[in-house]
Image (cartoon, rainbow over the protein chains, first blue to last red):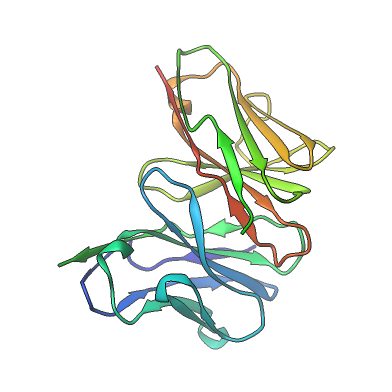
Length: 114
Length: 116
């Protein structure tokens, strides 16, 4: 069975500061990993995905994540936070088989202060 | 990018009535669609996996007679909440899996259901 753990339900940073959102996964097969962002009352938007190619994945809005198999982690980072980054962030995992659903972490709320 | 729409975006209904939510893939064909439920300040919980032309597969604890799912075409799946009660009030989100992708799913904007 697969699972995702997001450490820290709420992260607060100052504008311009480094953003680090943590995600650890558990999977018995090679995983596909995703980060999604959700703004209030909206659906999910894909930030980036890992699909067994490069371990450092660059996404939209300046975000990137690094797949570390030895640590079973896929942490999301951004060098400099912007006010518009304030949102809910979800890490998700699926296995490498076609048609399987995504398993989501509980989410991390990112707050950005000026 | 691939676009998924949901209709309605917000619905309020009386207890005991049924509500149908549509999920459409607008510019691609989706053999598989997923329905999720999200309570306030919580994560998405998978309710069911819907495959075109076959019966949906429901997750444990989800009543299939309560949440009727139909996936009649490659671009449309519907979720009907039957005999809705206040505890069914939630944010329902669908996603569509694009064919020949790395399990990438595209999410609809969600439907907020409020049952009075």
